[in-house]
Amino acid sequence: MVRGELELEWTCHGCQQPDPAPVQQLDDSTTSWLRRFNGRADRADLAFYVLVPLLLEEAATVKQQVTLVSENLLNRRQRSIYISIHSRLFWLWEQYEDEEITMAAFLKSCSTISGLGPTPISAMQND
Image: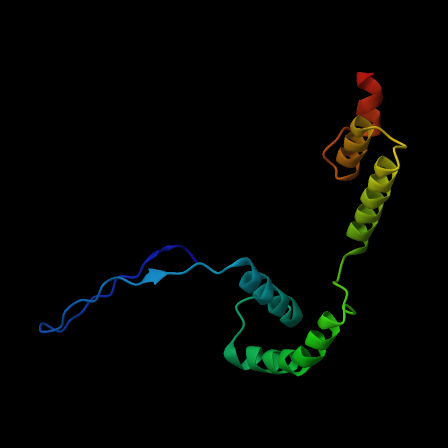
């Protein structure tokens, strides 16, 4: 949604036009929640009759999820590529904390892992 104001036209001559109501933007948690439902339904702009069964399924698991989160037993879902990237970054951080690599080497390796640094071929050409 776009931030702005709704303007309503009144055809009644005796009615007063109300103050414009602000349109509120969805926050990130609501946006990700809607994205998850769209993914489960394999499309966006879900109709009410499609959304209701999905909401019922979600409501059935909420109590269990709350229990698992409070006991620190619920893991988040991650794609395998991000699991690999994060494990390499944590490994680098441990090396830096153990003073096995310098800060410059740590930062250069992090930028290469995250795809922001030079590729090995371009690094060899610049040396």
